[in-house]
Figure 1 (cartoon, rainbow, N blue to C red):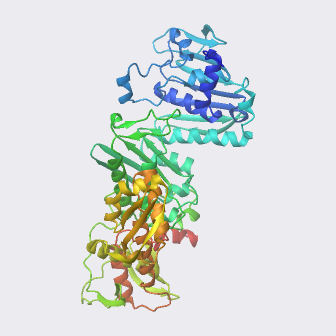
Figure 2: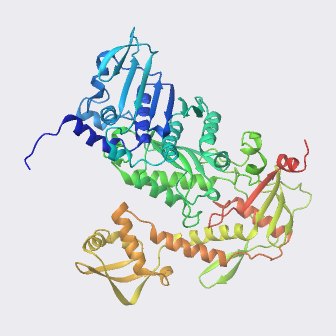
Figure 3: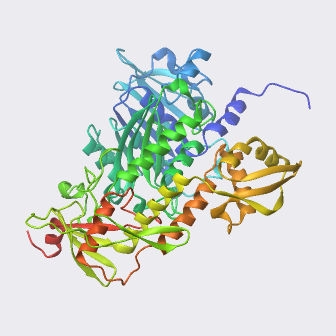
Length: 588
C-alpha cells in the first residue's frame, strides 16, 4: 500500500490510546491541569464509573477565550515553549495531548472564566459561545469511547472502573495537601477532603485515605542532603503488606513508580522484613527538576534520573536510618481507640518524628557482658547479674524495669508510661543479629577458592554483563571468568555461601544487574544466613531469667538499632499505656 497522511480525527484517536486507557486516565489528566492552573478546590462528579460522565470543576486561573478552541488541538500547551523548557519542568502536564486525546474519544465540553476576564465562555461541539461560569474551569466528558466501540468493550465493570478512578483521586489528594478535593459517584459523596495546612491535618487526610491503622503504625521522616529532600510517612516493618497496594511515592508532587526508588526502599527494609512482604509508605522526594527527565513515558509515570546512584543511596540510607530510630507503636492502639486522634498524647508516644530522634535520647552505659561460645562461627552474649548499687533510687528507663516473666517467654516491665511486654527470644535475636552484622562488616567478605570450579551456561547478554560487572562480583567475593560467548566459570565464593545454590544466585544476580544496574542479592543471602545464626544463638523460650538478667536485656535493646523488630519483621516489644489499661477496665 502507498504511504498517506492519516486523517486528523483518526490520528487523534490513535494517539488517545497512549493517554486515555480508561476513565481513570481522563481524571488524572484533567486533575493535573486543574492543579497546574493553581486551583485550591477541585470538585469531581462521575457516573457509571466515569463511562457516562466525568465532570471536573476547579477555581483555578481559567482559560482565555481565544485559547479555548486552541486547547483542543494536539500539542497545544501553555507550559513549555522550547526544547530548553523540557530540562526544567515544574508542571504536572506539559505535552499538550490530554484534551485533544480525550476530545477524540468522547463528547467534551469546556466552560471557563479566565482570571481578570469579565465574561465566561464555553466550547460545545467545537462552537465557542458565552457562558455563565465563576472563575475557573469546568470540563465535562460524556460517553467515553462512544466512537471507538472496540476500546469501550475492554472497560471492566462499573465498580472496577470506579475503583481505578478513585485510586487516582487518592494519589492526587496525598500529594496536594493544600487543595480541597471532593468526589461524587452516581450522586453519592465518596470523598470530601478539606485543605490540610499543618501536619496534624495532613495525617488526618492520610488516615482517611490510607486507613487509621497505617497512621498508627507509621513514623514521620524528613531529611535533606546534596540538594535532595525526602519527607513523608514510613510504615513500620511490623505493618508489612502482602502486596504493594499501600506504596505512594511522589517526585516533585508527581506520582511515580520507578525501579531505582523501589529497589532503594526494598533494600532499606531488608533487615527487618520477612521475604515476600512489602512495606507501606507515603513519601515525597524533592529535587532540582533539571536532574530528572519526566518526559520518558506518555503518561509520565516513569522518570529517568541524571544520577540514579545518588538518588538510590540517599533514599536507601534515609529510610534505613528512620526505621532504625523508630520505636514500636502500641499494638493495642488500633483495637482500643476507634481513631488514632482520640488520644494523641498516647498515640504518638513512641512514634519517631524525625530521622535522628530515637525513642531513647541518650545511650545508656551497660554492665559488663560475659561472652559465651555458642558455635564455632560466632558468639553471643549470656546475660549476667549487673553490679547492684546501694542507696540509689532506681532509674526508670525507656523500656522500664523488669517485674516478672510470663511462661518463660515474655518479660513484663514497668515504665513511666505504663506496661511493657517483651518477647525475649525475638529481642535477643535482634541484638545477636546486629552484633553478627557488625563483626562480619569488620572482617569483610571472606572468600574461599573452590577446589573444583564449575561452569554455568548463560545467554550472550548475561555473559556480557558478567564481564562488565566483574568488579562487582569481586567485591562480593565471587570470582568468575569467561570461557566462551555463552559460558562462565565460578572459581571463588564467600565462605558463608558454601551451602547456597550458587548457580541460581549468579543467574539472579545477573538478572538484577541487567534490570537495575545494581543488585543486593548476595547481601540478602548473607543477611539471611546471619539471621538464621542469630535465631539459633539467641536465648530460647522457656528459659527462666532473673530480674537482673531481664533488665540487662532491656538495656541492651535500648542501645540496639532496629530493636523494635526481630530480623523477620516481628515486633519484639509492645507498650500498653495507662490510658489503655484504664480503658480495658472501664476506668475514667
